[in-house]
Image 1 (cartoon, rainbow, N blue to C red):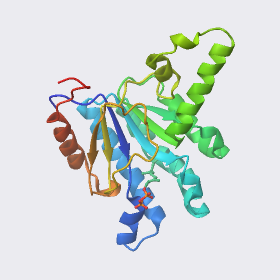
Image 2: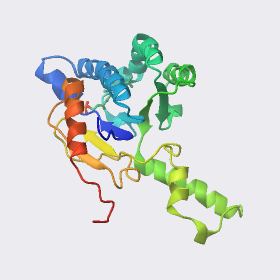
Image 3: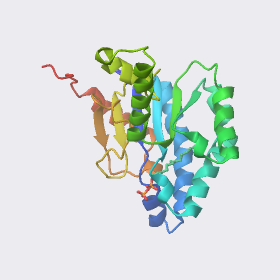
Length: 233
Ligand code: FPP
């Protein structure tokens, strides 16, 4: 890859519609979608991607039917049980953004254990956005900065863009270079609004469970043919 994006973010959309097409319950689509997380993560790591952020559960997803929410809560355990060994072998480090305190204790433990066990890996960061919403993230960052002003650590006039970036959940990661959304919808759905300021966007009709490594490489080729100007010429 001549110019692999350092940070790729994916809205993994279309699991439900994929399942419906096959005459299966929506949960079957999520299961297939989680298998595809493995495919794309391994591929991205081999291509040299540094951070892959996946929108796995949004702050808005709680309003889905209870049965579907329950299933999504159980999926990390199934996923890491099956694939943690392989993630380790591929030197992939698991990370998380979002407020996972809202999750059931066993889900939280599974997520924290995957983070802990892969902590010293030096390959790609596989970053799951779980109970994540960008407006909530920015709101929390504002609160933290306001606290710093209140306690005298910071002057209002000194607050700059870097300060805001550093208070976001992605603080230690570079801004997103490339954002992919599968399954035909062309919106951001409260995902990484600040971090996507200069990202290139790629929307495809292919549903997430059908988004193969070849589709992923095709998307990166499109990225490679874009000319990023960051407001210049
Ligand atoms: C959107 O498709 C997808 C989600 C809300 C869940 C995505 C989760 C995964 C792919 C699994 C994540 C895996 C781990 C290990 C956490 P949708 O249900 O909105 O699809 P639809 O628009 O067709 O209904």
